[in-house]
Length: 510
Image 1 (cartoon, rainbow, N blue to C red):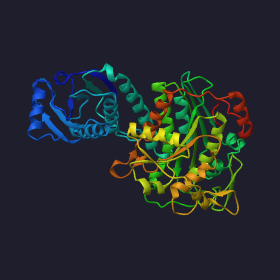
Image 2 (cartoon, one colour; image 1 turned 180 degrees about the horizontal axis):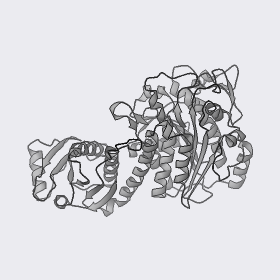
Image 3 (cartoon, one colour; image 1 turned 135 degrees about the vertical axis):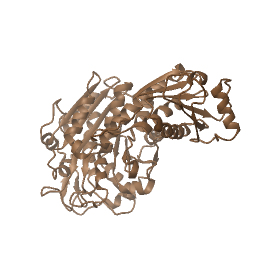
């Protein structure tokens, strides 16, 4: 879909060439004296358009020059959440007209946050997945114009929103693909496709390289599948070479049966979404390609299937991780933390400013927070606060959860350095405590997106979260001075010696 920003007073918006016009009206009185403004003011005075976000008034050809389909939507206080509600409702109401061109006009002055909210809400409301359908009914809207009284003042936020849409929709695309259309190799190819351009680089490692690095936990999960594992290393250099990067680690289980600890059959199809952490990392890199902020970012994606054959790991098996720590596998369905722990160890070689892992990790987090907020875990107050701010500004919210040392007691094992699960109680926290054992050398945060990465039921599909949160975090960080890595070559060399050699730029071998 093509987005356009245009200076468009309400009177002029009525005559703009379009199949549908959506007018966003705030609480303040309209000052225009044109026919459309008069009509809207009269409707508000009569109580036909309450000042509550998302309330609508649908009109048929209300003034001579206007399109046949006109929807007036209240944005109440004009905050981002109210705009999202209004835009979503208005586009649903206009969809019956099957418009190819839509004008979305603010009746009053709009700031950058309002415009960004409108763009993101419109893109979300109009997104349609078509990749594996034979009779693909694509979104009919081809062109959407955002009309505001002063386009120049909000252009930077509009551009940011359009770049984010590209990333969010890329994450949705790969999250929605069935597992046979999103194997680890296919996911790696998608990453390679993102790395075109002078600021990007992508390395993909196959099973032999993974074994050589000593990633025994990752390889253990992958060994039950006929699909070879891939370890994806994406790099974006938007700042100076010596600036410490932010490392994003995305869980890439392209399908999760639970292994020997088999999941129930009901809704197991939704386990194709178990790579949405990986999809969000790829979505961030898609958005970075559009926005090119001054920051260095590394994306790490351990990608494999968790399947169940004669080679699959069993409860009671002990795996040696890349860090040298051993793990007793008490439940093969707690596999995400096993692939992530090796990726977190690998992240150390980049001497990162911060490491954030993103994973559909635990059903316990869904019970705790539902589908509204992602779970946020971090021992670092500054990093946690920055991620929470980004969640609020992007409307991709998270909630900080505890990491008390006592929660880790349940991970003790008689046969290894740790077990991969504790008891049922506080399952999201104990999963985070497991990951924390591999993060002593850098600032770290964990986002459990099990409740927010996709929707079930009639609206089943990937949400693209938390691309918005991550991009706001990175853009805020890019606007601040970045500390250079002290003795970067020495640190990288020391790290490489401890955790294996850096990958050669080559395609993976099965």
